[in-house]
Image 1: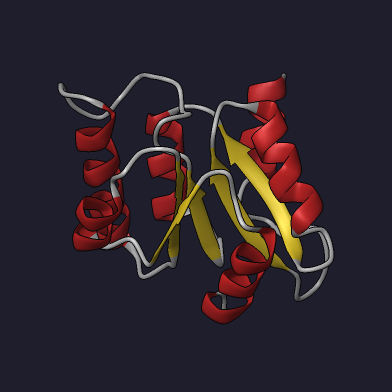
Image 2: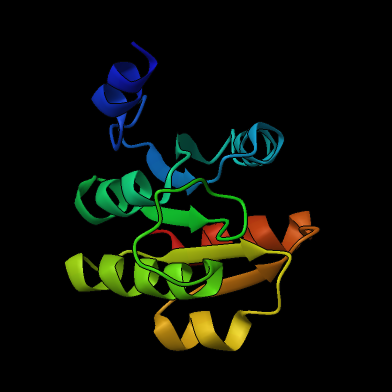
Length: 140
């Protein structure tokens, strides 16, 4: 039932004209923190698995997407580590549609993910002011 509800409401804003953001992360405290930070700016949907995240980000009506590449559940997209899968995810989403991609990570992957097409890379722990400013600046 949870999967049906999540899929049914993916990419659909909860109010007229409201921005929607998809978060790819399997850590509930991180997703909830993002929800709280962006509560007055947009509706937040989530995917906990990499394959679901890429599919939804590529086809959903989201204004932007946030990927926490070292905090997302398998199945992964290809053999290799988390970095290789994050790079593949960013490239696949950018091939499918032009949507701002935010990366939130504890790993030093900035150069690789920006080169793959990510628009914003932010190290965790997150600077709240910088994150909300980046969302405001990049989301249409």
